[in-house]
Image 1: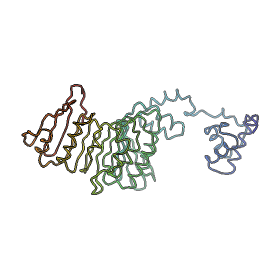
Image 2 (image 1 turned 30 degrees about the vertical axis):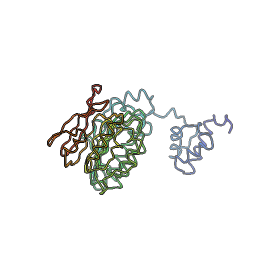
Image 3 (image 1 turned 180 degrees about the vertical axis):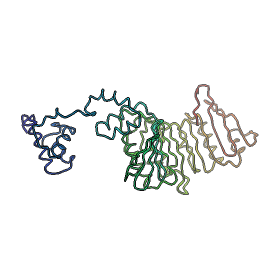
Image 4 (image 1 turned 60 degrees about the horizontal axis):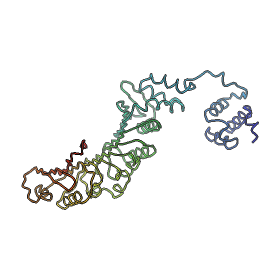
Length: 378
């Protein structure tokens, strides 16, 4: 199409009016408009203005848009940000739902203020926590109540999960957000469909800087799809409070094979579970705490062989398990050991010193090298 025609605003507006008269949805109309005239003729914001003006019956092609009263969203971004910085957290959350421009600008203002976000869900409640700010979504007959501090709003026909996930995903899509910690908590009353919606939403988002993730009440079958959502190059600390949903004590092999598990430095697992985890799948970690179904002499030998024969980053390891004979386990590391209910001994390899602790419900290994300044906290 000739460039001179495309420079004629009246012609371009007549093309928009043509789309309006066909009564197609605005996005479909904009797509048709771009296919006919080109993607760079008019951006979506300007198209939206003329589309809805014509749609409401105002067909004046010569109308001067400059005569329109200026809206808040029409201000330069830097000035708009200075104004919005004066608002409280609640007002910012409301304001970003007003229009597309504010939905993009508002989260960028608060991005640096939030390093931790968590999502908690019960059967009739959902909670979003942005650093120290908590929003509550509570179901009632015919809708949902959204509450922040002393402010509450009823959303007729609203669903607490959908509203919470919508606010959650809008906030997390901010490119300037540098989250370090993220977590999800499920109560036992949350159904499978709702749990799956949360996992799917988490999977649609980007997590470029996240270091720590925690999941409370997660089922074993959900661990792999959940941790797979995150950037394996940045994740360092994984915390799992597992709710056992079957009699299978052994984590699926694909959990151990995931890049997130292999790149993590610290893993903590607790909750209603006693797992079967090969030590080979823990040996790369700096620190871990794991509940085992059974801690045997053979398992202790596997740990000893690894400490003796392989360079290790391991600083601290804790196994929670019933140990029927702690002295027998301690003698794997010191055949002459004479102990009692709590057995503490030193074990030295050619390159490192370790302290071994063995008692009725716990086996622990802790590195004591002088070069280790800060021991990991479990």
